[in-house]
Amino acid sequence: MADTLLLVDAYSMIYRAFFAIRHLTGPNAEPVNAIFGVTKMLRNLIAERRPTHVAVVFDLGAPRKRLAVLPSYKEHRPPTPPDLEAQLPAIRSILESLRLPVVEVDGEEADDIIGTLAVRAAAAGFTVWISTNDKDFTQLINDRIRLLRPGEKADVVFDSAAVHAKYGLRPEQMVDFFTLTGDSIDNVPGIPGIGEKTATGLLQQFGTLDDLLGRTAEITRPKLRATLAEAGPHARQNRELVKLVTDLPLPVDLPALAARAPDYPALIAKLRSHGFKSLTAEVEREANTPADLFG
Image (cartoon, rainbow, N blue to C red):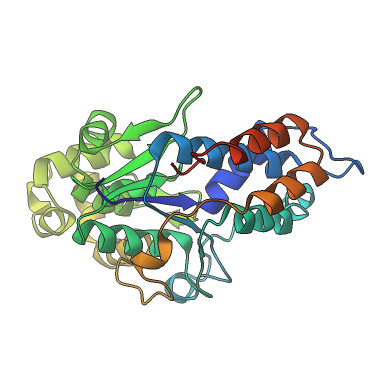
């Protein structure tokens, strides 16, 4: 079987689970909706993709490098809801019992860790799946790297054709697209007056941001021409913020991410303690069969 690496954007999944399942409480009336949702999502994802290697990737600490470029980076992000914050230790405990490797580096964003692992694995011949709802990862897509974007009933495979269908661009143009449009979620301001439609048209015409900035005289709209003629420093700063890092030094190598069977006794005990009766029964049946979730 060919090697496949599943990379899970931890907080993307955790927030999705928290908001998708509401008002679920445990035996002591404590919130357990995110714990339940993440456990179900991970098990379904692994059962469907059957990866040979897995990593669940977390942010850890402030993103120092991007904050040095833009002190207001991610400034408008709301704080973690208290009911979700309270569930994070239990989620990490479930990951431990699932025996899913967790990768995190102080001061580095999960996006860059995922980017580094994805590029490293693709170069080693792996097929890479990134489970996330973050559009920034479209810049990584190639013949070996694809996204699994959450859909209403099933994850949607996002490949080069899907990027072109949605944005009218190639994956390698997406960094320049985000540079022009900015990112409101991360508080990265775009180039004034340039929305998605204009950015797409410019990149379809000029190909790259560098060619666009070098040929602004060819832009027919006077106001847009004047804006882009002065946009160089802003654009270079934006590109530094939106471009994913793919060469971080990491504390793990690819063999350390090999998939393993869960620690079933520990997992069952934890699921039972949270009051997940049907899920506990499902895992108990699985533990008693010759083929576990990982095959």
